[in-house]
Figure 1 (tube, one colour):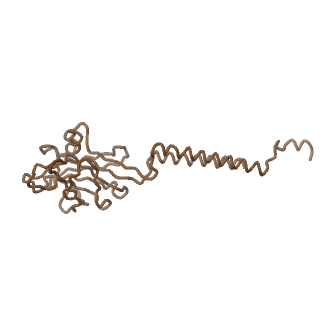
Figure 2 (spheres, one colour):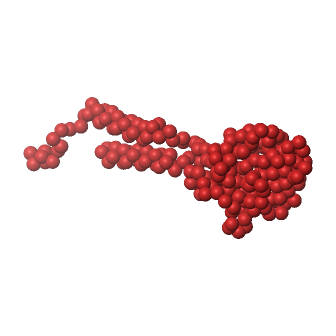
Figure 3 (tube, one colour):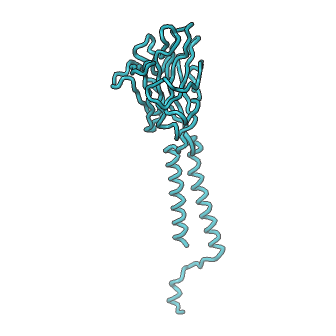
Length: 253
């Protein structure tokens, strides 16, 4: 070998000890990258597996729904998800009944009817039967979400409400009674038999001794097992960092 050939050799020949040192350094860098990826998830309280969404049928402006058909209103979740749930209003015989947004205070917020005295769900004149009902369509979420719950407002004094499950649109007849005489007001109550029924019908609980009883539908909530967008972005960022680290390591070998 000539002197000229020797000038082409690296100034420092790698040794096993040097390789080990470089490997430890790369592992430290990887741990730091993974830590930086995980920290935002902790601080933001992001769930990697689930998120609860709320669909609220109240409207701060109040008033009758005038867009056709007036007995139907669909709403996105309060945290926009692009998943809409629809509420439909009917007389007890299944005829369309115009909906009304009520906003008369913290416990008088929700959706009722334009043609009743207090713009709420009501009973017949003798109080023996529901005069109308609300049908909540959960068919968009009942198989992909869990822990469905409903919130009813304006439940005061002797007032109570009933809940029914059905797969039949615009009909109370034939529905299965799931909740009988609840007094829960302005709190979420578990929707029984979640994942079984496409529709839940809400009515005022019959009471001939108190025929003026009335209530409001307020909201529905459920939990999704799909990662939230922010979680997916963080995971994608972490995966990208790991890929870059691997490419860098292979390039050095």
